Image (cartoon, rainbow, N blue to C red):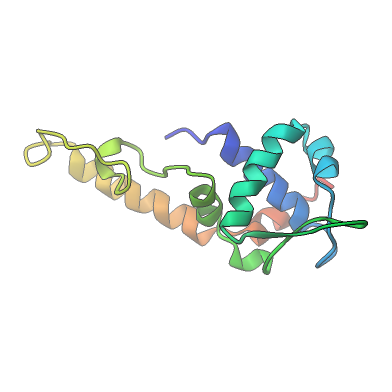
Length: 139
């Protein structure tokens, strides 16, 4: 499994927002500059994060983005799901992207991949934005 650039940027941007005063709207251009991410790319990511209700926006003067709920309630797995990231190590255990495999009933490695998939799911679904904010302050 390889974490995509889109997911890495989404997580970094949300950690950035989580480190701001509660409810303070931050212009996307500021986040893009702090995180060294192109504004257009971050706009695409934020559209998905907003659709997933992980962030909210405020229009007009003083507008921008802020996280929609407490950082300790936003799991890294939620962010991955919002941007379309699969957590599965191989396609045959990815419930959404599974493509039929003719060897599924006789595959000696599939049980191993299923166990690994469960470990990965648990890891990303038990770590939150709050955990990442506690790791180290970068802002």
